[in-house]
Image (cartoon, rainbow over all chains, first blue to last red; front, side, top):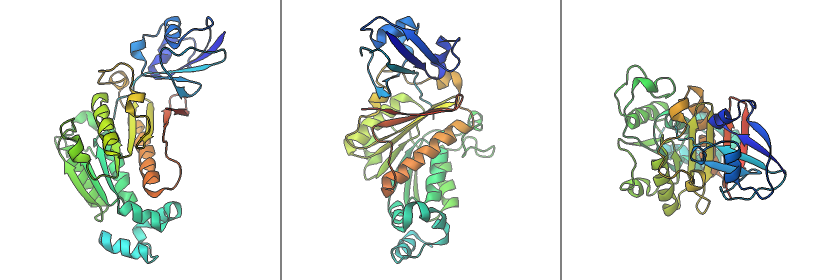
Length: 78
Length: 243
């Protein structure tokens, strides 16, 4: 099934061929967010927020065909 | 003119000149609510400096500014309160001086100390809205828990590089642990690599001030249960649902 991964800020470095951070990805049926992180070679420790179709989600969330997965690094500055 | 006199004038339908450009947006009643409100700003650096500046101009009646840090040269690129003449000065004290110079109707208390688990509840008691202008995740989580326990709305902001995020957490809303739920114990974010350029904190701070104004006046729709994320490198402004 097909997923759209959107990488934000420093996480875009994981997809140098997609400078806008939008990465279409074929994933196995039933894949979780954690498994997708492995596919795009992003360390879960570098991810602070996960959004699926614009709504906060967990690492264990099972993804569906056509889902939009947003991955965000932590912002802590002030 | 003092605050009590201004409030009496507003109640009688007269708007003092200094607030006239506010009234079309928030109304005289909204201005009165702001002048009667107590807001605490935690941190007086990149975010907090601009937040304090704008809240004083907007006409918040009472500001408590909490920061134990002092200005250093590496603050000059973005912290509106930092100047070449006040390096070494406490940031909360500089904020209080700025507030008084802008608007003498605002009562301001400078607290030259870092917020921590031991002092947070005492410092925030009696406050109507708390603004998170901190520079680390650990203290943000302490602030978030304290505001939640006290039932005080919290306006969160954080920045790094070209990016920033703003959220309003009303009593009962999902808290900051929803935003910072992964990587527990990590004190800093990607700002350690990206730094904080001049405009990013001013942009985030302005959005935070709009949230404070909306919460206090009832005008508009605060970012409750939502997070606004901007990345000006790609001109992205997106709103996500925190649940």
